[in-house]
Length: 491
Image (cartoon, rainbow, N blue to C red; front, top):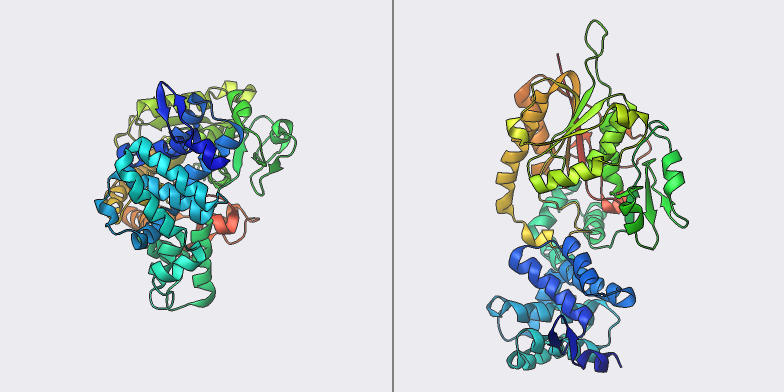
């Protein structure tokens, strides 16, 4: 029945399709990610809405698009073994159709016949009849084994080439496997539990996260759960450590977001802002506080700024949020615009379009500075699975230069005694501890604070490279792999 339904000619947007709308939409997402570097998590919801795809069809579309992006490395290894042509010589649309078919055959409950037949129809839609026979032949070979039977054939032996095996088994580029291993402080020679944790970290990056939201800190005080309890819908669960967050077990967060009662924000992202707000600021020698002002230097699209703005208001401070890109600055302004209550009115945030490396503010003007630097984004692979295929080792040096420049500027912006929070959504040492320790040593007037001590209830938080740094992990904390370092500028 499913295959018959998929083969029916369908009309959508003036076009006739042989393939069904969920598979065609998943294909369109894959093609946009590959051809114009679109972001799947931004494009897919828009396509679902534009095409009126809801319910089970929306769930199928999401699984096909995200699952294929996550499993691409594994599927390519299997497809290469089943194809008489090198994959890099195939027309890109053909390769995307094959990957979608492989995902259905190797990782879903879709029947073999339906997976092959719908892929053939999709090939006819996207490439034409000339490719359908080839797609049919390759996917029929894929269907002869399940994933567990294919892995010993297509992956290197785990004992001879552990990184190569893990790269194929969990669908990562080899360089990311090595970078994760270094970040976890494990060595291939250590074996045993450390390698097991590396595999757990890679596997967690392929799991679909639950939707986590955060309310804006308000008049109830730092750490109070009152705002959250008033907003959290029935069936939602409070986050483990953030007093402002909750996760949805089902349902759509659109209503809460549209009403500005909550915003989608990972728990580790919430905690990064909370840690900076808790870091003690040393006052001037005469005991008088400086004019309270906080800075979010790279504020777009506004999630941490929204949280930090509420915390700043509770501390009697005003937040200045800077973003270099005008369209992202508009998102920041929207995120900060819904603040309510006396504290918010008295300390209304300001949004600037500005490059943090060439600051329009005076040096030493802020008590706290958050610098959430641009990075590879490899800590958020659960939500942005295509990032692993979009980034490469060649990107690291350029990003490192930008990260160092922004951290230098942040340290210049904070007054003596104030604190800078350096945050990345990446666990890679080249973007985290290497950057911070290098700049701290270069500056000379900087003290690295014990960040994990500000969240005593969170286990396994100190980073192996330096226990003063905090490193969240999906497999340990159920969050994105966010890194936090706190630096105090000395007098």
